[in-house]
Image (tube, rainbow, N blue to C red; front, side, top):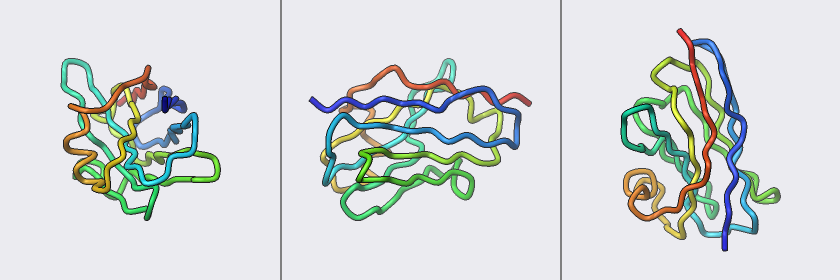
Length: 126
């Protein structure tokens, strides 16, 4: 069974940067992998998703131009580089993987289908 482990969260001031990592327990080809976040008192939302097959990406409007998702298939790891962080980026960040071809569908709909791990806390202070 595929397992994903998130890491890299922390406390940072507004304007700062963090890089999150999502390490998979096995090779993941032809998967859509996404980063999702849940702010206190809010539902889980898709932040950014990537295809391990062709590298296509999707970003939520709220993070476009600030976040960059990337993959290292040799390490079975997906990264989320977060720059120019804002207090509203605060939340628990989770990664998920599904054998889907559409990265947009992954980010928009995967909350109803994916399994979730512990996540990693990101706190941005003003």
